[in-house]
Image (cartoon, rainbow, N blue to C red):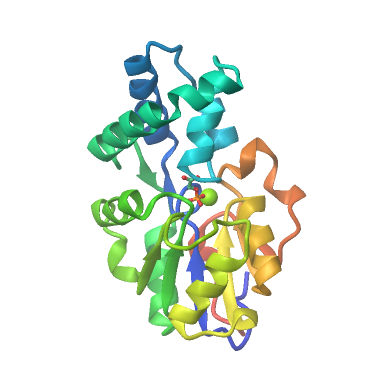
Length: 223
Ligand SMILES: O=C(O)COP(=O)(O)O
Ligand SMILES: [Mg+2]
């Protein structure tokens, strides 16, 4: 699809958009659950649950076997174990999606400044992009802890636009989920969704967007 005319910058989501990280989440969560003596989760659970940040993911994971009080009691220990394991394996069970490196290179060649905006903690996001050879494309990397609120709140997008020096209406958000689309709409940014990501386990075409692409390198310069 053609990029909107007059574009000033592009903001890209990470998990499910640039990198298939479901394997990393499964491994780190299951090591955490093992430490806590709790039953394991599977790939399908991760694909349905990822995208709303680590706190949400850990709470939902604990809720598979715990009531509300159990989740509250175990949360701090779970978060510490999760962080330890995730940082140790970050990127080992994750793969860059086909067309991503080419697509980012093309956007950069058009002179568009790029920001990565994910709900993943910044301390997980930056090393992952480095390990996968993608970090050099980005002027900024903002994690879920970079601002006061996370996507689907528009705040992180508005802050990213500010950092990029772009007007929201001329800043494209590229993501994989309703979370990204809602944040983009509320910020006044056009949004394109990739068709291969997670989208909370739902078909992505259910989510209204300005376009859908099967690969990032399908984003073509405006005609
Ligand atoms: O929920 C997460 O940790 C990350 O999700 P996102 O990169 O799709 O924003
Ligand atoms: Mg995502």
